Image (cartoon, rainbow, N blue to C red):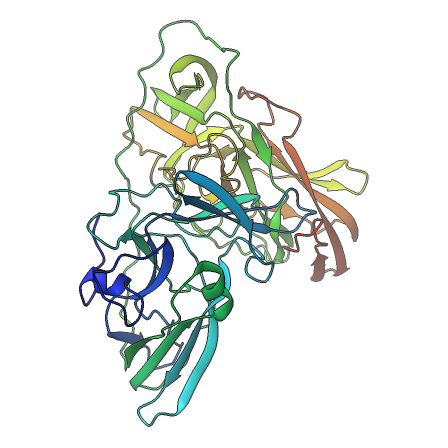
Length: 487
């Protein structure tokens, strides 16, 4: 783990403005830190704007900084609760609604002003921050590792998240897309960064502002070669089982579906990663959407595939006791090699199913998407029992294998979900000839019940959509799902 390369000694950075560097803080506190007194930001000749990545960090001095963010249901608001650990005791306090409204971070945490070389103010705005992320030690005595998740997750149907900064660690305060880029002419500017008063008062952050000299440069955007598909080393899979299937009574995963979102009409020209998967008719209209199945635990879903022949593996589900010891396995279907451009990995069959229902809940269209490479793409609820805050396989290139794989292990960790975008013909729903009216997108986890779960009664989610308009100019309206307005 690398340490932050601060411009001056770490202890002086951790000291409040004007105090002695060697003086230890009277109590655990947050500090605004600056890594360098100069930064360079780049824009292109056709200005897109620059993100105000000013080299500032939020450091936790003396004890961890932790906030748990959750909502009881999609009909309840998001609430942030600070977990305060001091002297072996733990207490909590609820944060104001103005600070935590979603799972994307603390709202309007920083106040930033930029002045040009003549002293004219050219930018003034508040900026939100994510008090989590890829942190690093802020002083030599800090712990070697951090238990906290990396980043503030933004799935519209997230239920629980954890933001945290390890003791004597720091995380960057750059917004990374939460605020719009700023268009600035090439030149030199002075940035003044202050923590807004409400946060200073609540968390005991020193009031002294930080200043950074900012140089904006214009450069040609480099031509990026088409990225090559990565094949990461596979995590070692268990040997092919030789004994009988054993499904113990202990902990099992609990797969749950989320309502669909990112719902839109497309013209059938395909697109997305890998291009069209079936012949697309531009005169047709398709209903595209995103869907997620997650694991509420208390046990991970672990599926190992073992090669049977070219393009086919037997799949086995593994079971673990409360201490994480493997205690059984059972054959649970198959894995198939998907050779299409943009895929080229192993898919586990019958993980989820997507259907379009009429207003009376009768099926009218079924998605052809039937096989999946399992990955922990989204943090859905990191507050459930045994949630893994640091899952390993978080994209399709970390656990899905390649054509030469003898075996593959695919895992859906407790608290995480796997999102798929159904935006290609065959995956999306052909609605060309459907009449206007109310429909439901149905997402079903474990549709054939081939996977062993603790609860099969929460595997289905519905999302209401309303088709309108005229042929060739159809419209879709997506009402909010309780308090979640995520069309």
